[in-house]
Length: 356
Length: 271
Image (cartoon, rainbow over all chains, first blue to last red; front, side, top):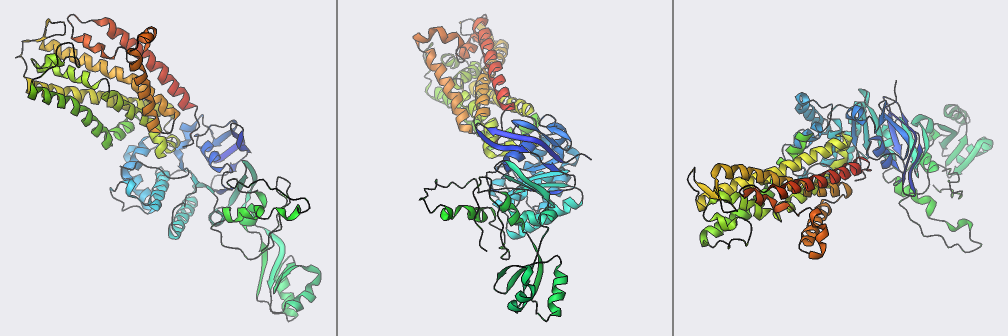
C-alpha cells in the first residue's frame, strides 16, 4: 500500500536560513498523524511543500504515491487542505466560494457539486448559512468554512494546519468528532499543530519537528509507554516508605514514586501490609513532557545574549529553558506533578531540572 | 479555470463600478459639448472632438481617444495588478494552487479575465458613445457620409468598420499595460503595488515621449503608438504606425508574460 505522505531528505533553505532540514515524514493510509513543533520550527513550510506551494531546495515529496510538485495535478484534488488561516472571497457567500474553488481544479464534477457543497457545510455545521457574504462571518465561521472547503471532494487525505484556530471549546469538540468520524470511514488525517492537547486527543502517530529537523516520529502509544514507575498516594506515607525503601524513587508529601513493574501487584502488597492507598497508577509521560524533551526553545523567542558574571555560570540561565512550556502548551491542562526529565538540549546547554 | 476567473471578474461589484466610471467621462464630455456647442478647434483637444458636433457617428472614436491616455490604463492596471497579488493578499492563492489549479493555467485564466475586462470596457465605452453621440449630435442619414480626419468623406459603413478596428487596436494596446501589471502581480503580494508599478511604467513612457533628449528611445516606448488608431480614420488608412504599434505591443506582451510565467511557476507561495 502506498504511503499517504512520504518525504525523503526534504530540505528547504531561504537564503542562509534552513527552514526545513532533511525531514523524513512517513504517514500511512488511515493514520491520524500529529505534526508537532514550536512556532517557527518549519511546520508550515513543510505543509506548503506537501501541497506544492513551496518548492523544496532538495529532497522529495510523495503524496498518495505521486511526486509533488511534478504530479500535483494527478493527486492533489484527492487531498483536502487547510493551510494556516482559512481564506475566501469576502463579497461572496459560502456556497459561491466553495463552488468557485471546486470548479478551479480537476476532480470536482459539476453534476454533484451542489450536493457535495451542501454535505460539507452540513458536516462543519454551516448548513443554514444562506447567502450572507463571508466578510460578515465571525472567525469561527470562517474556520468552519475553511474546513468545509477541505471536505468538498470527500478527500482521501486531509492536511490541516491548526484546524481549530478561532473555534470555541464546543466548536473544537465538534471538529474533533468530525475528524475522528472521517478517519473511521478511511480518511487519513495529517494535523499540524502546536496544541498538544489537541494532538493527544486526536492522533495515533506523532512527528515532532524542531528547528526544521524531525526529531521524533513514533506512535503516541509508544511515546507514552509506562516509565516503569508507579505513582502512589497514601495517607500513611511514612509507613509505606519504610516498607518500600529500596524502590522509592522520589517523594512529595503523601505522594510517592516507586519503581515497580506492576501497579496492581504493588497495590496488593501494600494493602496486605495494611497500608491505605488513596490513589495508585502507572506513571506515563505526557505528550507535553515528550515534546519538551525533544525540542529546544521556541524560535519566536528572542533572548538577549546572556552577560554572565564569572562564577555565577551555572544557575545564570533561569527563564529560558522553562519558557517553551508556556508558549507551546498554552491549552494543555497542567499534568499531575511528575518529575520532568529533560536531557541536555541540542546546544549542549544542560537544561534545568523542571520543578513541578 | 477560465470560466472560474470570468465568474470571479463578473461577480465582483468593482468590475462594474470601474467600467461605469470609465464610461462616465466621455458621456460627460458629450453632454458638455452638446449644451455649450463649444467644440475644440480642429487640431486641439482630444482627437475627433472637433468633428463630433457635426456628426455623432464619430463620437465613439472620440470617446476612445478620451479614455485611452489615462482612464483605461488605470483600470486595466488595477484589474491586472490584482489578479495574482490580490489572491495572495486575500490568502486564496494558496487554496487555488493547492486545489490544484495549476500555476500556468491560473496565469492564463487571469490573463483571459483581464482580456475580457479590457474588451468589455472598450465595448461599453464605444456602444455608450455611439448612442450618446447619435442622440446628442445627430447623425447623417444612412448613405450619407462622415468626414474623415483627412477631410475626405467616409460612408457610415466604413466608419463602423473602422470603429471596430479602432476598438481592437485600443484593446490590444491595453494588453501591454495588463502584461506589466500581471508580471508585477506575480512579484509582489500587494495588488496596489502591482497596479502602481504598472502606472509608473506608463507615466515614465509618456514623460519620455515629450522629451527630445529621449528621441532615440521613442520608437520603443510602450505608449508611443497608442493614439495611432486615429490613423484608421484617415482616407486611405495609414497603416504604418498601426503596424508598428501592434508589433511593439506584441514584443512587450511576449517578454512580460514570459517573465510573469517564469517567475510565477518557480515561486514559493508564502502568502
